[in-house]
Image 1 (cartoon, protein in one colour):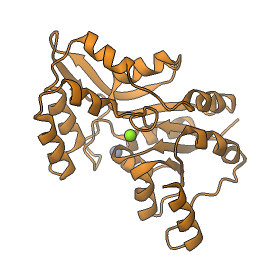
Image 2 (cartoon, helix red, strand yellow; image 1 turned 120 degrees about the horizontal axis):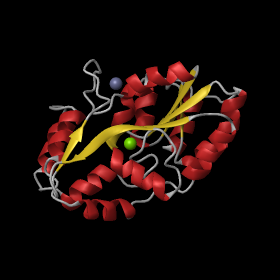
Image 3 (cartoon, helix red, strand yellow; image 1 turned 180 degrees about the horizontal axis):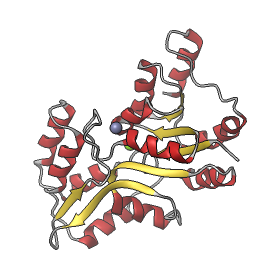
Length: 238
Ligand SMILES: [Mg+2]
Ligand SMILES: [Zn+2]
């Protein structure tokens, strides 16, 4: 029986494209980019950013479904889930994105049995949408829609050790609270800068290879940034 549980980001980690950005690019009033800039500048948190952006969407359910049907996931993700299940490691999806998009993409790959915690997209008329935040936490420093550090606390009630797999800003608050991070993209730099225990990955094909060592307890995280050899190694993966 494994001690580990896996929390996995969705957009940019499981999905190839960022589903929320794709939805806004295709179906929102162009004002969404001004809201995005306020978020990038740190003027608002992602919760307020997402709430205001989703209110600018003008599309019916059929258009949303067509968009979700065009989005791709990391081709190695289904095999990764299978390997984790075989090793008795639960996998939970924790996302600051849209629940209906995640459920749609997972169902297409027969993975909709995976538990999902995400923001809730609710119809507010035939072409209007509202985003609700059942997993928000007022005490989280990053003011995200879904607080991933609170999800880490929940995961610890199930298993002793938590592995986070993620790629970006929405994973920052959780990265400092878990035992190990499999990091992609911007999350690599975040973990390196804060000396968090992480292993850089380019996708789930890498993560599958790392699972046996994780289970045997001899997976070596990248050492802190002042160790030159580990620093050089992490550069080759970034
Ligand atoms: Mg992401
Ligand atoms: Zn948090």
